[in-house]
Length: 92
Image 1 (cartoon, rainbow, N blue to C red):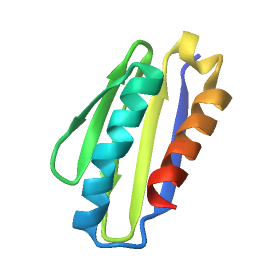
Image 2 (spheres, rainbow, N blue to C red):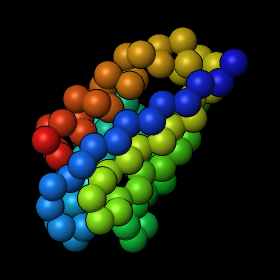
Image 3 (cartoon, rainbow, N blue to C red):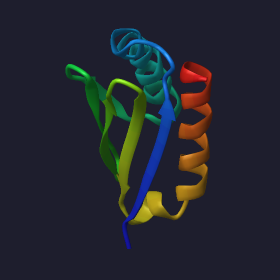
């Protein structure tokens, strides 16, 4: 059964500055987890083996929503913890 992971953080900066930080977060997620992150305007799409979703940035928050296929859902806790850690590193 597929699972969903949602991680959201206030970015405490301007939307433009948060978008700039997203570039670093994307590179980190790509190197650590082998996903592909395509930045498009005020957000991004995330794709990978058994993982799909996206990231949105609004005036106050950054939110990552992922849908995990069956193999990835078996380690959903580790994936969520990794995304939480990366978000904390980039957005506080």
